[in-house]
Image 1 (cartoon, rainbow, N blue to C red):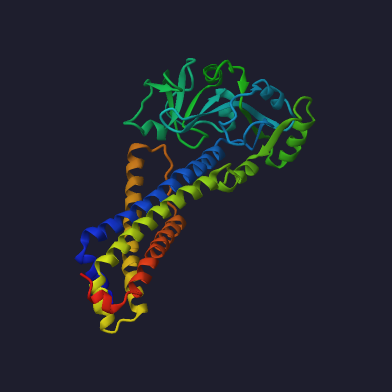
Image 2: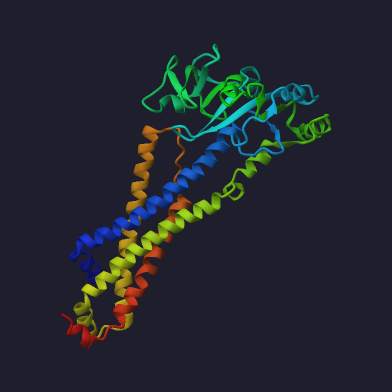
Length: 369
């Protein structure tokens, strides 16, 4: 049986290659989309947890996703928060979600307070010296051929900023500019902020700080969350449309693989009418014919799936070299899920051609020209 399956594939190498390549593309599509989408979520969780804040405050009508809500609240709220008994540091921040050139969140910060949450670790350069200075992390510094202190780069359209310092990654974002400067570029919001990061005098006082904020006049409408609460929300289940988008992309990829295998195997069955007639005349049962077709499909799917995984790791290596700021995790669980989907979809696509082959009348098949 296995020799027959391999022989059929080797006898029609081009058709076999097309089927294998179709499955490989299906696997690459699924793993790449999952890596990009999940990577953005995981990257945001990791970098935000490294800011050094215990809690953060944002307006009730703002999104819990940093960078989505603009800068709708007065930055001077940070001064109010800093005066509370158990607040050690309160930092006003503008987080601007930007899609110009690449998807990223640019942080507008007041350097002294933001640095007080957890000090920047400078690899090269200094803090802000001029209004249009920008601090970048080491990942960004290695991207696009490399960036150095003193280089001028475009941020938010054609606005040029001078790199004044390069720091270790993991402190919220890849690019940091002055809050007032970013606010001006966003349309006169230089005195505003998106949210406020808080460092408590003692982690045990978080609930007390929440109560103090709510009891402060004018602050009752603000949402107060601990970093642990926020991190628990940064999962695919809590992100609007994430699961729907992921399901849609995976479904499209599976359908593409299904159609490719269906067409390939259906055409192959039509071409092998006499072969099937000979097998049945020699005593091959319907189950034997179905088994042969499905084994052939399974072999194509397994080889195509493994090729797709290898191609995805190749894409990951290329992205790491050319776009180190783009998270692209390839998780073992998703590799197994994707291979199961690809192989299952391929077998489903081959099921009807297999049944059609098994039901052929041996006399008609032998007389087929």
